Amino acid sequence: MIIIQAMNEILPRLAAEQLAAHLRTMPAVVVTGARQTGKSTLAEAAAPAHRFVSLDDFDALDAARRQPEALLGAGEPVTLDEVQRAPDLLREVKMAIDSNRQAGRFLLAGSANLLLMKQVSESLAGRASYLNLWPMTRREQLGLGQCGIWDELLDNADADWPAIVGAREVAAEDWRELARRGGFPVPAVHMQHATERAIWFEGYLRTYLERDLLDISAITALPDFRRLMRTTCLRLGQPVNQTALGRDVALPQATVHRYLNLLETSYMLVRLPAYSVNRTKRLLKAPKLYWGDTGLALHIAGVDEPAGAHLENVVLGDLLAWRDARPRRAEVLYWRTAAGEEVDFVIEAGDFLLPIEIKATSRPRLRDTGRLRSFRREYEGQARAGLLLHTGDALEWLAPDVLAAPWWRVI
View 1 (tube, helix red, strand yellow):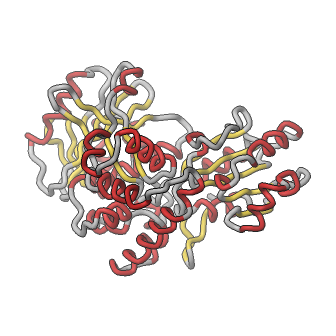
View 2 (view 1 turned 30 degrees about the horizontal axis):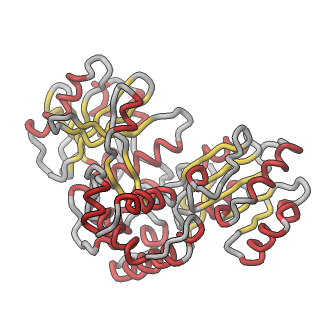
View 3 (view 1 turned 180 degrees about the horizontal axis):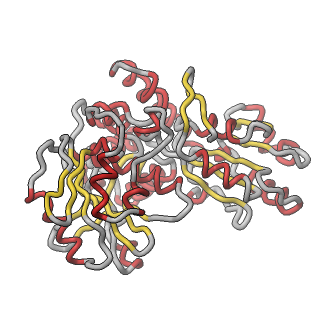
């Protein structure tokens, strides 16, 4: 397994195996994710024979803009880090690939979703594959290089779930502490005190606002942008309502729309789509709003005590890391009816649906299963048993078709 080194500790990353497979297959592989998720370290470990060029270096950035063909070299494999800083460089990468389609020749890393950036006119279609690197999962932070047991649940019969979940030898912990530290390697793994993490998060935020944001768009009113960031962090787990957000922060709806797109492009914001059998309708329904990292979200919101929405966000982070590291595509969505019934998350994998409900309670009850059972009735024959994750220790069937499990045994 390819591993990355975070300061003095060597920690496996979930995406390493998939990245290695992509490098063996495609001429170019693009790894994107928020800054400080570990992309550079992962890239260096995944391709040690590559010449490594970071566009955070001003000389390298100048060369990328003035002499891109010289920067790419004459056929030698190269890793280009923070490539979103010179989007025009991708045209040169395309031409280089067209003259030599050797697998693994280019490894590109960036702190923005290149496919969503207006400045990027070249997608490298047919020449590159794309991977997302999310903040570290809980099991990555524990040194296991894993995510939750979602594949095991999907690949086994519902009746076997208690044995599968119960067999996990992962220690319990306070979910609120996990939410506070988030998943960026430095504060999550190497900082033990809230004061240290607060200093790190504020430095990260200032760097994002004052430099990184300029790589993808010109923002002239940073106080307005930061105010919108804080408002979104206070609305975790709620459907996106751009008009209401604009009213709260005194911004036009069009500006809110643009700012939300920028936050999503830079992996700060996650908009979770709604589930519908009709895939076109998924695009029309309001997505739910979450943040890329719970520790940063709490810092931006100025909140010390995590709430139930932050536990949802922790689970979602694990689900997204799982989704983007698996070779078979799966979707992570949520379900809501016109009458207001809602299931926090729905995994759509193949022909099956796995509904998941999150409860920040240590003693779930039968009444907590209602929404999961409604979903199962709506999609009978397609929906698996419902999974209710809670903060206690009990592993039991609350209903014949709903398994209650401690969150820490699953992720």
